[in-house]
Image (cartoon, rainbow, N blue to C red):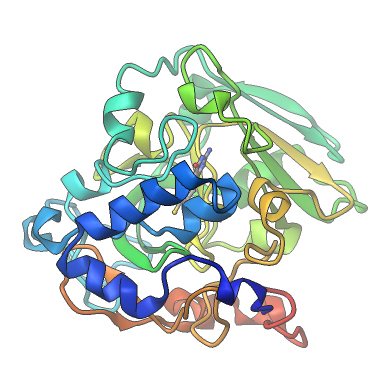
Length: 331
Ligand code: MTE
């Protein structure tokens, strides 16, 4: 990955460690950067990774999730034995820029977000386009529980028990045409309810994309709940994508449109800062972000950093998708 931003005024990794000890420093520096307009809004926000002070993060031991199937091997842990991140953390430390750039303010800003009625249009290069209400989705696609790690490009991670269904099940119903190669996703654009949409620094609505074979991988989920409860607004109600081997920004929230297309679609982050946020965005400890290493991460609730796993620990399930590709080029 390119490294041209190294000399900017952004903090470097050791400063980040310092800011975990004196957290005000981190928030202060982010506000200062915004005030001084030192970087474009988009590049700034994910760069200034809002790792919270350890003292503000609830203890992960208090998880209440019910393990059932999928990749779960034991109650309240993922298949690698890591504890679930508590519900309170999963729902009060969020990236959802349509509501706020402040992770800890999103839950409050999104409170009361009206998601009924809600429809998703699925179309483009398909034999059988459809528009489905959430009621139809909940009726037609049985939800299962999957415990997945979520690794944000900013260097923090969580373990979340999702409720949802495989995207492949929906795609099979719409029947992609032979020339469909990618899947494009779009978040609702509801300026009455989402104050962040007034920020002209982003090409709204939030958009994302996957290659069709990535979308068909059994790990790729459309989630409608967490911890056995409906998704709260801040986590992407009423339905969001979860792609556990990719950085969290690929997991687009509050989806209203899914289109099958022939060419790699533009996405919000790859439009804002293409040299920093690639289309593939596979979790990879060997490929640094231009401004920080991706070799380690901070699991919310833990003090020290842990090594980041290739494909976020799902290498066995997904490495075949990238055979022959140079992952440092296709980042
Ligand atoms: N989807 C939309 N529509 N808007 C966003 O700002 N943020 C992304 C992703 N999906 C985002 C989004 C990022 S950067 C991350 S890390 C995850 O959501 C965070 O999901 P969480 O808040 O549920 O942990």
